[in-house]
Image (cartoon, rainbow, N blue to C red; front, side, top):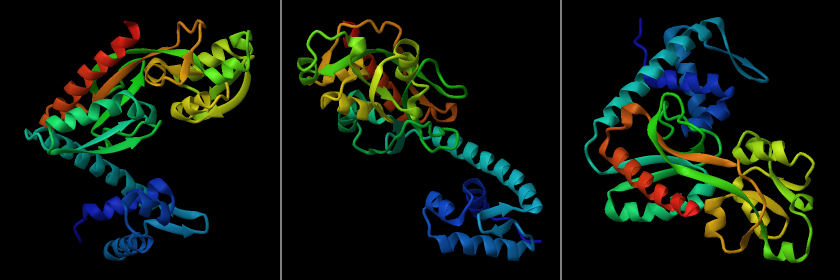
Length: 294
């Protein structure tokens, strides 16, 4: 009987999770033929058929499904070991994988990163800007800075303040709509991917009859459309405060607010570079968001 190689299981997991060799290759950062070769080699070595090759992709066989359950248990154990090892790192050096939104990176988070790098030049960043939640459990990211009403289950971190959303427009748009009630103006709304965000929920509750001129799949795109005179948009206060081309409207958006969190996995919280970065960012974000209420 041949011993299992964890690296082989990674290839099987990638194909099972993504449904095709090409998709698995993109996730693993290798070429299509490498994935095909590794799976064929594993099947030949262990005399087992893991996948059925079909026109619509690779489908697990019964044996493959049984193997997948064990492979996922091994994967969880490996991730846990990696986190525990990383969490014991006492050096202020190495890489921090940071996930945040494009809006935060272009504004208050982006303003704080240079100061941290000046203090700790041996720490580098890999930054992912996405509205989806990258998994800290799988170590897709080490630290997440994200808006949320509460801390996500299974994570450790601190609340770095609260921010409000306000209605903004450009001066040019307001000049072309003199005396018009805000609710009757052209509104720019969050798209389907932001339907569960704070501005998405607020728009459904309060602006169901608004004339929607455009929907956007990111807050940054929404701010750009407002800046260019497309209409009125609900934007975070930290965006409006840092963009002098935006005009805050006298319109009640009182319940449109959210918390901002700096998060990591509990296993990583004691790593020197992680907790030092989290402390620095939390203090800086608290100070910047406090200006919105000053």
